Length: 265
Image 1 (cartoon, rainbow, N blue to C red):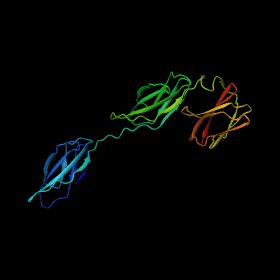
Image 2: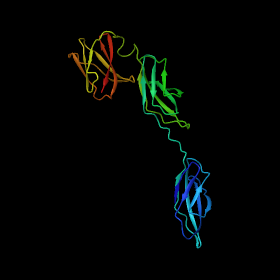
Image 3: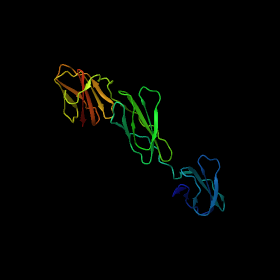
Image 4: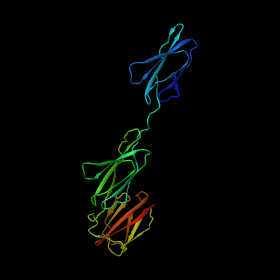
């Protein structure tokens, strides 16, 4: 007993003909149903119609011969077409253009979907949320120098809502951050960074003593920080474990901070 040409509301049943058969009794039901639907067929096939889309069914047949009735066949199962594709959760979440009071959040596009965005300060108990038809959001009026976390749910075209995405993080900038009761050096280069791009190490060269450094990824998350040994003029930092991409290193020298970008190959 096999099933072919399965549609949303119909299917064709086919079985091996019995030369002694006068007719066949066909029964079918939804898998969770108690009662069977029955009809007779004169040939070794039957067309089921009026079925429910995306539904599991059970089927069986019995042969009517001159000498009597056979036992029921083993139960076979099939599922009608029309099941919606699962509403899968997002993987790619990115934050860009982070300032002391705003951030642009971007995530992977799901065609024809809309999204629920959730975000909050990392230490907060409650989430801020809103729904958007676009795979991005611009957040304003954020507190400076504050870590945030965020995630997204997909609202698919069939109304299903996906599982939450992974939680992503970013931190706003600002004068209250760890490095910055100091001023950012814009015109004067206080140190040199080489090589750039780099694969395994970056080296910092400065005539002044570098007191502290922080390295950020493009999402605004600190990926490395620390103090550098004051006895050596060239300071080497291991970046071999970083993912490929653009990073920012912020250096403190006395009361001044300088930030430059570099590329990890």
